[in-house]
Image (cartoon, helix red, strand yellow):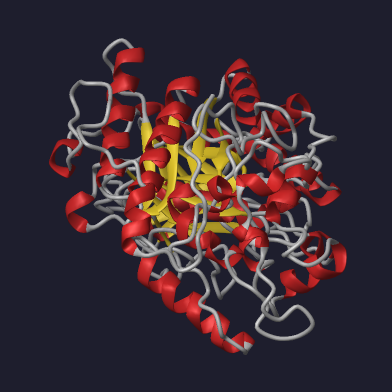
Amino acid sequence: MSFTRRTFVGGMTAAALASTASAQTGPRAITPGTFAPTWDSLHQYKAPDWFRDAKFGIWAHWTAQCVPEQGDWYARQMYIQGHPQYEHHLKTYGHPSKFGFMEIDNLWRAEKWEPQALMDLYVKAGAKYFVSLANHHDNFDNYDSAHHEWNSINIGPKKDIVGTWGKLARANGLRFGVTNHTGHSWHWFQTAYGYDPEGQFAGVPYDGFLTAADGKGKWWNGLDPQHLYNGAIIPLPPGLTTIKAANDFHRQNDAKWDEAPPPHNPEFVERWFLRCKDLLDKYQPDLLYFDNTELPLGQAGLDIAAHYYNSNIKSHGGHLEAVLTSKGLQPNHIGTMVLDIERGKADQILANPWQTDTCIGDWHYKRATYENHKYKTATQVVQMLADIVSKNGNLLLNIPLRGDGSIDEDEHAFLTDIASWMGQNGQAIYGTRPFTIFGEGAPETSGTKNFNENRTTPYTAQDIRFTTKGSTLYATALAWPADGKIRVRTLAAGSSHYPGEVGRVEMLGVKAPMPFTRDAQGLVVGCGNQRPNNIAFVLKIQPKA
């Protein structure tokens, strides 16, 4: 395996940058087929039925950033003087000039990772697909990467994490997905090319300036830190003397470059393309998630999308089984892939299947979250799931792993509670389709957008969510009625939503059919004290024969 070595030079000119680039001179090698790498061609896409039926997936959002147990974005924020993660790093590991993030990669050993035992828990919890993080903004590949030496075979766990998860997921009847976040890493890791503006180490460069030549005699001999940290495009300029000035610089550049391809750096784009194509070709995932707005890196993202769809069709006997997800789709790009909404959801039934991705805590394991019991509860997640599914969506839920590969006691308890509810009520979730309306109760006012998942008012028994399967209608009450009666106003006699007669009403988890009346005010189901669980309550409503 060989890699193009690129040495960092502070303040590189455009000419110097151009001289380091291995610019692409012709079309990229992608699998030919139905889809061309254009937005117009991607409009042929249709989400496969397996995804529409699955509804619930579990995600292992796991990298070396879980080792310090300090939560999200550690690899970036450990280089920002004044940030709590910088302070933790300085106290625990030393100054970033001597002990940078690549050293954390080396500390990540996954010594307590028991993937089969974890997969057993996820299957019992009702997951129908499992997703492995392939690489995060920290630019480390969790697989046997042919185009990036900073990977989990060479460093840290010394294991093919993606390959292991994939084999176990499929052996347990789950669909398998991967997530790619590295389109952001070129600017996200710019903080490694900085220094402390203030204090004892003022002006001392961080380890982002290291080159392959500096590794002689060290554990990383033969590796180039510039391939991990991406080389400098907009390093922190010299002469800043306050933390505020440095932070302002980073914020301004993030806003400017967040979704843009790296200027003057086609080498990064080509390496990204080759790494992503290698990931797809080796592991043939059923789902590919991009942590981007639309597709990453311009034409390279379109090329990957077409390659993924075409290669998936080829490997599935002419049928498209692939799911590609990304965020923030423009109106004229809706339908080219599955819309993903990060930590948010839709406020209505969307015509095309979509997905929420969220987490019970921080994306990367955070010890304080566990110690202070700030995880989402099983009740909150089931309520969210019922709401999302009623609107034609899926829920992909991250259960954070510690750096050693284990989960904590609260996460075990959470999965046990979810397993109990799904075992009793899963038929109202899996394989369902939306009703004529998603539900009733207090209106959702947060819109369809990222980061809107935190409902400010608790759900009550008046909050109902609908799903259908054939002629059966499921109505899920998101809380228990104080008087023991669930009222479904949408099913009032003569309603255009349900013009036929109701023949039978059951509550899942209760053996006997439930007594009901139906008049102009709605369907009223007498539940008494037959409360089958402590989370949410599903009525199974069938028409009169």
